[in-house]
Image (cartoon, rainbow, N blue to C red; front, side):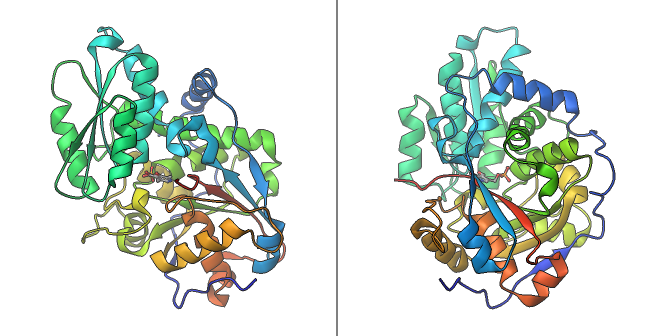
Length: 365
Ligand SMILES: Cc1ncc(COP(=O)(O)O)c(C=O)c1O
């Protein structure tokens, strides 16, 4: 099967990469991650998600191995965000004098974090109030409501919804379970990232992590990628080559790595990879990724769509892997990079490469 080729490939190699040094744990400590692993393992319905080998894709791309962690079944919530929000809420409730029934969990969302928080709030017996921007579709809003949460629509982007949620969280009994922290000192956002690091702990039980040369991770505000990167770094004592992947129109990590500091990107942030439509990195995530990311790249919506369709059919005899619009981004990033000679050379992608990917959400009905 012929894979889609991007016409151009924006790729930036991070001069500040420190993944060859030992993990320093200053943002997420090993104890934070161990606590998350123990806590998440006790949530109802916990089961590690599968790691699927994609030899057909590897052959099509001229790589040694490709394996994808398939998050579709995560807690029945459809994706990786269900690892973070419950652990964040649990963290806040444990430090609250009020009973859960007197608390309201509050967050802004591109869709999946809010869904996960609504689910967690119901499981822990508190209310949930979720703020969404105009990019979030009706079906997602209805799904969040169906879990008993109140949904507040904000006329603006995800970043506007974040601001509205922060304001609402000043009310008594309100718990801001935000996966985005622009100040850099919110323990709850770090707890959420520790929740995502569980994926790396699962991987360590599913594969010999040290064999893997590259990991492509999709980024919105960067929390998911940073949690996974921190987990891998701690497990291995170094990082594989981690490549962040973002939509071309919402590439805040790419812009920040180029600038050497966290920056905000302008524009509507419009992309079909709606979970990645973020204009500014979360600071704790930036602090990890600015050292853990070997490179940053962006992809176009159309290229992501073509990879999503190809993967859903199964490439080169691989079993079909139905991934959501956001979930496909890391796989699409690898396909784009592997198809451009200059990018292959810059990243050292060749027949000896063994690449890990995360399909961070399953196909939506
Ligand atoms: C399925 C999925 N994958 C990845 C991400 C990116 O997460 P983050 O914003 O923490 O970078 C999101 C964000 O909502 C998401 O929904």
